[in-house]
Image 1 (spheres, rainbow, N blue to C red):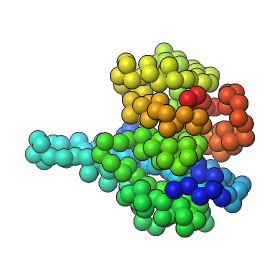
Image 2 (cartoon, helix red, strand yellow; image 1 turned 90 degrees about the horizontal axis):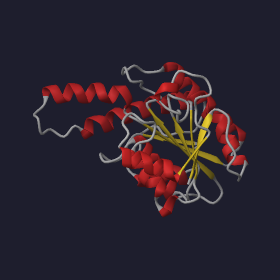
Image 3 (cartoon, one colour; image 1 turned 60 degrees about the vertical axis):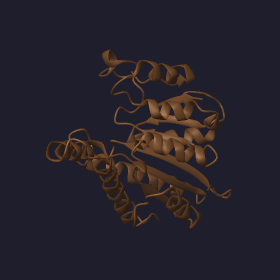
Image 4 (tube, one colour; image 1 turned 180 degrees about the horizontal axis):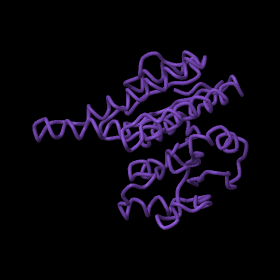
Length: 244
C-alpha cells in the first residue's frame, strides 16, 4: 500500500506503446521514458506506477489465436501477456535511463506493493485480470493507494469534442464531469478514450476526490505537474480534466 512519505502517480498507457497497427511506437516509448525521468528527477518523493495496455500487438495476437484455436479457447491470457511484453519494453527503456524500476513484470497487486515498499522510482506492469483494461487496472490501483493522482495517456492527447472535430486544433475538451462518465456508460460508446469499466470505477465512492486527467505522451510532465500544483478545478493545457 501507499507509503506516507511518497507521492504515488498512477499512469495508464493504453495503446501508447503499441499502436493500432500492432507496431511499437518508438517515439512514444522514448517520450514516456523521458517524461517519467523528469518527474522522478524533480522530486525524490515521487513514485510512478505505469500500466501498459496490450494495444495493437495484443489485437494482432488475439486475432491470430482466434483464427487458429478452438472456438471456445480463452484468449484473455494472450492479451494479458501482450500487455506484459509492452510493459517489459518500457521498463527496459526506463532502466537504460537510470530509473530504478522492476526487472520482472508484476502479475499481482502484492508484487506492486512489494516494489513500492522497496522504494522503486517506477513500477511498470501490464493488465492484471482478464476482466480489466489498462485504464481500469490503473484506476483500481490509484483508488487502492489513497486515491492517488491518475493520468490516462491517450494517443488522442485528451478527450475530443466529437468525431467531427477530431482533426481540428483545440478540439480537446478541457473538462468533463460525472454526468459525462454516466453518458459513456449509458450510450455504450465504442472506441472512446474512456471505457465503461474505468467510468464505473471513477464514479464509485472510493474514487471521490481523485485527481484525474487525460493527456498525450509528450505532455505528461507539464500536465502532471499542473495537476499536482493546484487544488482548484481549473483547466490544464493540452489535457482533459475529469472532475469526480
